Image 1: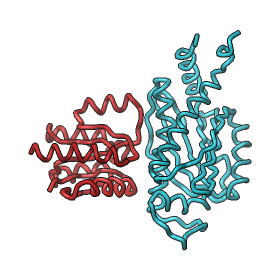
Image 2 (image 1 turned 120 degrees about the horizontal axis):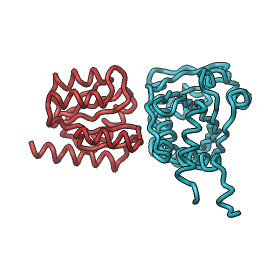
Image 3 (image 1 turned 90 degrees about the horizontal axis):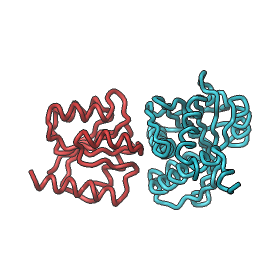
Length: 125
Length: 211
């Protein structure tokens, strides 16, 4: 099983992300965190294979969570799922070494893309 | 004089916001998986006092002033607050569409659960990001957002939305979404500083000068 940590302060978005990914892959074990700080704690505790991270979150922003996770594990596999459509934000976050930056809302095509990334990463382990 | 020369900066700004709103409608349509009819909004740039009068008219007409409000403040080079207003009595149906659920017993009352608030907060976040983010990309001015807030206001008045001390300008867009026969008359209110609007308009001048 591939362990995926979903970090999003919106339960609605957590549910949408879970539903889409679960539809494409039954080989995923999901872990959820509702803010950046909880995300960091679960990342350190559960050692997920992938982390799907929102950016605008309380306690710890997604950008800061990614930075801290990368300090612990430079190879941490992070996919950003954010409503922020600003090109500059995308540029900065992509330079942090994330696997992909995807804009909300999630749809079939984007979910498939995430599952392909997860599938390829899992096979590479 | 060429026709193009007569296009005012406000016309261009209106068009930029219209593109953002169109994008937001498309995003909403993706979320609820249904086609959304949308009236093309007219952006109005008003001073705070006139903005309040126009907004109070809307609040009186729609849902007798009970609105669900999703708002985000933004700062950095552009400063202000954007609020997305929906008539509260239409929200259960809208939330059900977003969650792909059907709760007949909840229709038309103004009681909302944490899940309802969470859903509208996230929808508001996505819609506001579409509108402000697209504008930010076009004029190449970055914005930083605060966390989104959500509230239901009974007897709401314009003072709730146009209250930032330094914000002297109000950009208002009234939009009507039609989702499977249910019309939701929403409004987007952007209360921003005069300096911010100047920055946007100057950038528009620079980008579109001579075209």
